[in-house]
Image (cartoon, rainbow, N blue to C red; front, side):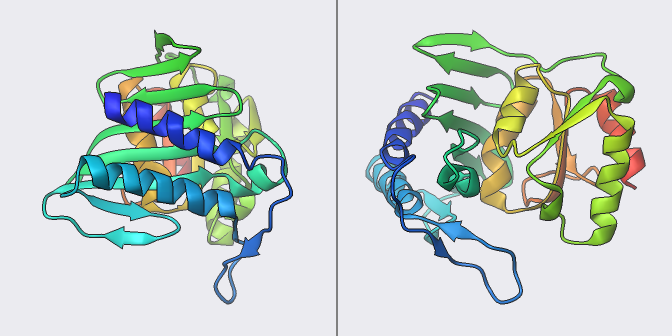
Length: 255
């Protein structure tokens, strides 16, 4: 946990030096896919993290968004999303963060999210979760006893869903909630763990998008799965909820 916390704070400074600067943006999308931006900030941040992990844990595997997989000699694997929310980053908004997590086999051990512009870190190990700002560490808990009609739901954007059917199901949940906020990226999960929002429902996520957030949400007492109630580790269609009751209500609507 200490290594993770120190590394993600240092990595955030690498990304931050490019924030609100004149960056060249490259579209890395494959044919038929949506706009998928990448910048020098994404690549340098991931390179920095990879180098530090390799120096400290040379036998560990690494999977990152920009540079793919590096196989190690054991069962430990680090997952890196150097800038989750590159669209927000290049738009000059603070709705982005650095994601880093460690798994052993299929077990999510620890995860962290850093928003360097606001100087905030969320970190968890599945049993507890903490919010850190200005060296002050606070244990956080998801909000309990909120029904669907009083819930605040977040999503990066409805366009992220792979099919019209999935998007319509998501909007069906939105219609039952108190209100929704879009454009939250990874910060939506931090707000859920901190007790400010109640649901995050998304689609089209990769393993490195979600694995670092699982120990934070679960450590805060929340629950996070795919839309069938299976483990969320592999990404895809995801629902994170502040309580088991709210999670069950959301799954019933989504299915």
